[in-house]
Length: 239
Image 1 (cartoon, rainbow, N blue to C red):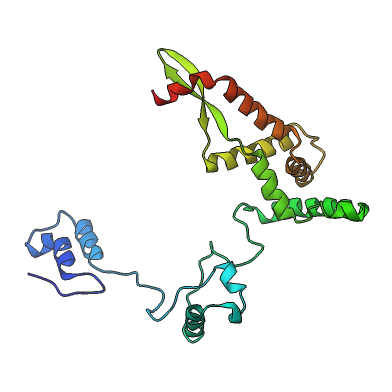
Image 2: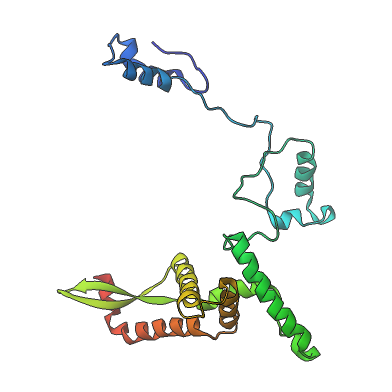
């Protein structure tokens, strides 16, 4: 027996699910029969009709002038102006101020504002020749400071012959970002004055790291020196 197509489910899939009932087997209890019948009913449908198009969230495409687009993109753009568009998910945005690394808007906004205030004060007090070398964009300072704090290698403890060796191993990009953020936050919370606001201390550390200075940069260099001193054990990494 083959059941017809119902709600996007094929008949054979329904037959496989309803095999105990079609064979005349009696369920062990009412709960199991209710569970089987619930699996036969598709209760979730698509939110949008097939006529809806995917949203365009690429910042570069949205900021281009219509005259700068190629012919194919112009046709697609004109086609999209007459068709309904799906709503973009909450995790995707085309805003120029959106940054995936800035996950705490209130706290990070205060930190970036403190950075920009200090840089603007330094910019207005500098001479015309020095103004060219002063960066006032807090997002550029944040990313460059974070990049300067990322370690390339770290020590990993591996057991060989009943002994543990500290072996230098390369660090993944996600691990590099985690260590850089961890060192910055730890330096601000443990080694700075507790009467100072956190966003002020973090802005100071980011500015120091942006110029390649500060305790976090020293910590990264110490990790690299330890890895360099233990390079004789690097072959233990491959067993």
